[in-house]
Length: 368
Ligand code: NAD
Image (cartoon, rainbow, N blue to C red; front, side):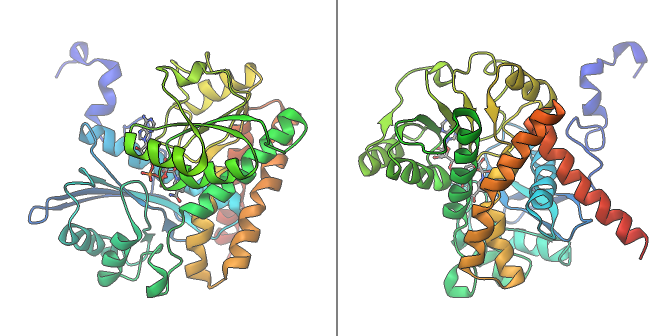
């Protein structure tokens, strides 16, 4: 191929892994293929300085392999910072399985995936993410000990989502305190996008506090169910970003804060569970800052789930899980103040602290 015919926008496709835009010096990327069960998975190990790379497995019907690779690279990197900022001795990793979790997930496929996880000898520890259930982790547990989020009957910590929702609620309250001067969410208009495992519990917390909750999802049956259960209003418009609300809670998939949305968002606070909400951390983080929108960094406030599964490794109980998760409130307030003082985005402030912890440990390890 001559230089003239290379489209520079396509260069990352010539170097499909190390050249990916989302590649951030990841330590190891493992491609898992098992023809018999139809398993096609990618495990991303971003950083193991603080400990083994722990992060959930997502099963998603990706449009193509590029999308899956990009997702696992972004997600595993996010996990490094999530554990670092939460003070856990864990590195960052994540796995994606390509396929429809409703129609293509079988016990054989999950077992095969578990065997690949096992082959990494504990460098990567898995858990559930979108498209996965506690029961799936129980199947993985049959073939490897390197899995968390297994059922309580099998000695695990069970479904992490309610704890994640509690942490998001704490982070949201802290961001509200920063923006509105009070963390009481009564009468605040909050739109929750995605009312799955985490979103539903968040709706419950918000409703209990008297917030005016609006819900959005692509699953009509869920909308009806959650609306009935908590008295939430179903969003029927076509552009929820332009909706006049106080708080926007992204709890579906990532990258909803992007070129098309950041300039029309009317919410004054953004706080949700979804990973990688900023399509571009620098550009979109800055756009929100300039518009005076308080963005509670996703990897900071959605750490409840990892705190919960970490308990399985460290043997601490529910009370400590709740204490650590509640502390997300204080950390969020600190990060928001830090961003203001240093005139940087809230995302950057969180990233600096997380990266600082990893760098310090790396130096300590080198001096041992
Ligand atoms: P889930 O699969 O249970 O729920 C996601 C919901 O979003 C589903 O109801 C789905 O129909 C809906 N959805 C998908 N696309 C949508 C769209 N375009 N508009 C509106 N709704 C849409 O997942 P979950 O476990 O609740 O996780 C939600 C998010 O939080 C994910 O990004 C996940 O990575 C992140 N997260 C989850 C945890 C956890 O403990 N489960 C922890 C940290 C981060």
